[in-house]
Image (cartoon, rainbow, N blue to C red):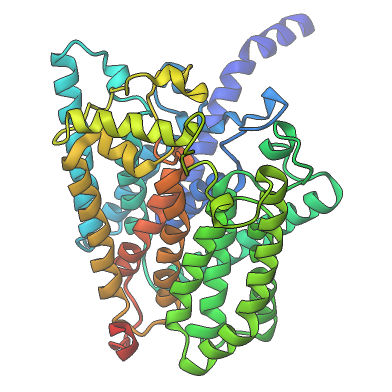
Amino acid sequence: MTLELLKWMTMGQPFVLAIGLALTIAAFGGAVISRPEVPLVAYLAVYFVFAQSNFGSLDLYLANPVYSRGSGQLFYPALCWVLLVMLFWAWLGRRFANLPPAAPSPVRNWLWAWLVLLLLHLVAGLALGQQAADVLDAHGFVQLAWMLPLVQLMHWAARDGRTLDMLGRLLVLAALLKATFGLVRLAFFGGDPSNVYQNWGHLGFELTYFDLCDNLVCLLGAAAATVMLFIAPAPRQGHAWRVLCMLTVVLAVACIVLSYRRTAWGGLALAALWLLWWFDRRTRWTLLLGVLPLVVVVVALVAARRLQVQTGGADAASFFFDLIGNRFGPESTRLLELKLAWQAFAESPIVGIGAWGRFASSQLIPWQRWSGGSFLHSGLLHLVMKAGLVGLILLVGLVLAFATELRRGLAADHPAARVLLLTAPCGLLFMLPDLLFGTPVPQLRSMQMIGLCLGLPGLVAAARLAPGVVPSAAGAR
C-alpha cells in the first residue's frame, strides 16, 4: 500500500507542479489586474538590473540569457512575449474597471507607423525571395516596433498622480542601488568584468559599467532626484528623502564618469545642459560657477587617463581618435564602416536597402565578419541605410511627437508629473551620442530603455491628475 501510494505521488508531481504554477499565475494576475503599474514596474526592473552586453569579457558565460531566452523557438525573446501578455492583461483590467481609453498619443501613432513600415518591408522581402526571419531579425529595425507595446502599457498603467510619484521615486531608488553596486564593485572587486579596455587593450584601468544602459539607469535616477530637489520639489518632501536624493545625484554621476565611456560622458553633458535650463537664474549661476568647474575638472582627469594610455594624447583629436581618418596610412575601421554604409544608402536613398540588407565589403571590418554587414556603429545611419529617407521621416516625426507631448505636459503645474517630464529628455539626450556613434538599434535593452523615455510624457497625459492642477507659466519655457 505504501509503495503504491509513493508511486502515485511520484507520478502526480508534474501535475501538482503545473496546477500550482497555474494557480500562482492566476492569483498574481487577479491581484494586479486593477494595478497595471505593478507588472510595468516588474518588467522595467529586468532592464534596470540585467546587462545585455558582455562585450570585452573574458568569460563567455557572462552573457545574461534573459534578453535571448526563448528566441530560438519563439523567434523573439520570451521577455517580448511576456510584454504582450502584460499589455493584454492591462487592457482587460481597464475593461473590467470601465475606464476610458488612454489619452491620444502622437508618439504611439508614429510607433504604429514604424510597425506598418516593418510589415511593408516583410512583404517586399518575401516578394524578393528573402526569408521572413532575415527581415524581422534584430539587425533590422524591429526593435522600434517592440517599443510600441511598452509605450502602450505605460499609458494604460497611469491612473493618477500617485502613479507618477511612485515611478519617479522608483527611478531614484533604482539609480541609487545601481550606482552603489557599481562603485562598491569597482572599489573592492575589480569593477565590471566586461571591461574591453583592460581585458583586450590592457590599458590599466577598471570601470563601473561598460553597458551604456546601466549608466542610463544612473542618469535617469540622478535627473529625477535633481528635479525633485531643485526644480519641482513636492510640498511634503521629507528631509530624509532630500538627503537620499542628494546622495543619488553624487553617486550616480560618479558612477557614470568612472564608466570611462565617451558616449556616457557626452550624454551626461547634454542631460546636464537640459536640466540647467530649468533651474531658476540664481541657482543656475551658482551651479555654473561653483559645481560645474569641479565636475569638468574631474571628467577631464578621468578622460585624460584613458586617452593618454590609449592614444598617447589628450586633446580633441584623441577623443575622436577612431572617427578621424588618417592622412597617411590605413583608414580608421570605424570611419571605413560608416563610409561603406553611406555608399549602401546612396544606392537606394528613398526606401533603403531593406531591413534584411547588408552593406558591401563588410569583410574589411573585423567585427563585421560574423554578421556580414548587418549593423554598424551609428544607430542613425543604421536606420537610414535600412529604411531610407522614409525611415528618416518617421524618426523625425517620432521626435517631434515626443516634443509635442512634452510641451503639453509641462503646461501642468504638478510636481510628480514634472519630475517624469523633465527626466524623459535627459534619457534621450544621454543616448544621443550612442545613437550617432554606437549600436543601440539591434539591442533590445537599449531600445526598450529609449521607449521608456519616449513614453513618459504620454504616461503623464494619461494620468488623471488631482483637481486644481493649473497651467504653469514655466511650462512655456
